[in-house]
Amino acid sequence: MVGLWCCVHELSIAQSLVESVRAEMSGHADARVARIGLKVGDLSGVQPDALRFSFEIIVRGTELEQAALDIERVPLTCRCAACNTDFPVLDYRTCCPGCGGEAATPVSGGELQLTYLELE
Image (cartoon, rainbow, N blue to C red):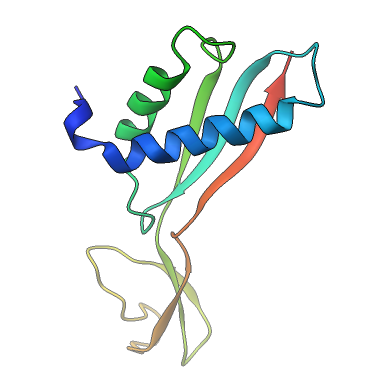
């Protein structure tokens, strides 16, 4: 179980998420939010379980209490500077598995993005 003491960062992110959802819903007065989609990259520094816990605390007793939070984890992926190949980073190894090149640039994994709202 995630305790509140470990997720102060995620609590502020969850609060911002709720504010964004409410702002989006201002034009849909008769709709109810059923699902909220979020992408969380491995490099974002966000713990998905702590974010979910924080979200549940913030929406308790509100119009968003029944909304499901769908979190899609985005793995760290790099692009090799030598051969331009994208590859997943495993065990912090950023050498290209194709050509052995050591110069790589992250292309995904830093995401923290609201991706969709499902309304009823």
